Image 1 (cartoon, one colour):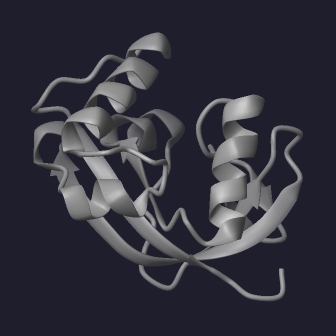
Image 2 (image 1 turned 180 degrees about the vertical axis):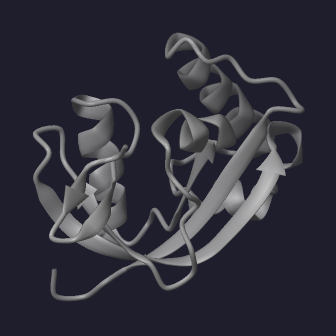
Length: 132
């Protein structure tokens, strides 16, 4: 089960430490408006998919809420079918879809959960909720 903060499910981007700090900063600046996760993580954690309108607490490495985001889109797809539009909305500076795929492939492989073109994913889009 994912952490809950102030009655909301939590969103923990990337790996704890420098990566999470960098990704959170991109969200706070408005550059990062999307993220991608493996569908299998939901079953592993006993969680349902997010839904449009759901608000999530964006957490830092210490588990503190740094912002609230609201889900604006949820799409089930596969690693090989992620669009450039979604990848670019992640705001991480990838030059093209091949670079996005290479970086995400390295991330999941390092986490012990390698992906292939057919690996089911969940693509989330969100907006930063003002005043949080």
